[in-house]
Image 1 (cartoon, protein in one colour):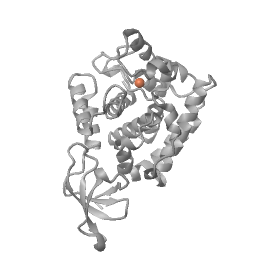
Image 2 (image 1 turned 180 degrees about the horizontal axis):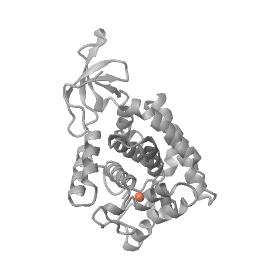
Image 3 (image 1 turned 90 degrees about the vertical axis):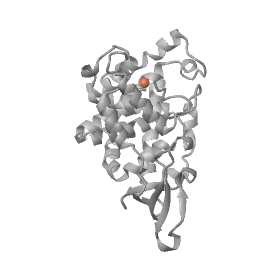
Image 4 (image 1 turned 120 degrees about the horizontal axis):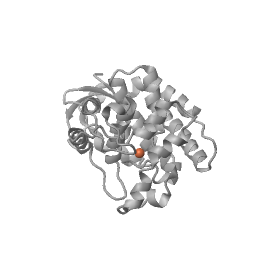
Length: 304
Ligand SMILES: [Fe+2]
């Protein structure tokens, strides 16, 4: 569903200030490493993903403390709509789901690397098809649909078989309607099912050349619909939706400004960016901040 590689050149842009700090570092390192992998792929040279593995390990170490911040970054798409971020977003979302499922560190590592590299086969798809603004012809769609198998082959001898299968099976669907092999739920690994959910969610909530993005709550509804149709794993979608759910009114949060605040209202269309009222420090107590229109202020802690 997602083409993670549109608008590649734009990824050269400098990160906006919101990416400063430890979380920003994770993003920047991951972005640089992914760009390197793509570059080597395009040059036809041997694929080396050691950097990716190290970055995922490092990311998992830091993820626990920074989960809310990372999640908000995924939601703040308009600040950095570029392609490499799709793979990073899928990694954040899939590993968040994995951690809520109680996966072991080893399993999360495998899931994270699989998520980072899930669309690596897209590099075999000609840019004119990948970037085509209009509707694809049947032939063009057939070419796109080769990317899971192409990724699987590309990763031969590079990563573990389980990781390769994430690349091969992330477009498989639980009811057998997916591709390339029409596998059913029990034949699709848990990691591939997690990446499928993260992939669909990030793809539909990102602007594409042929349609505007869905808002987060619309993306959540679409996931529910896809799981009731039997495409996505319903149990996993439920856990995923809980994990990315909004902050309920009354939640105390700590902001990246150092202030403690209370969630006083939801933005129904953007659940991760509620309206808050500052409680502390005293001098700014009572100040109302609409996070939706203040993208540089992040929620860094819940129940502060
Ligand atoms: Fe894909």
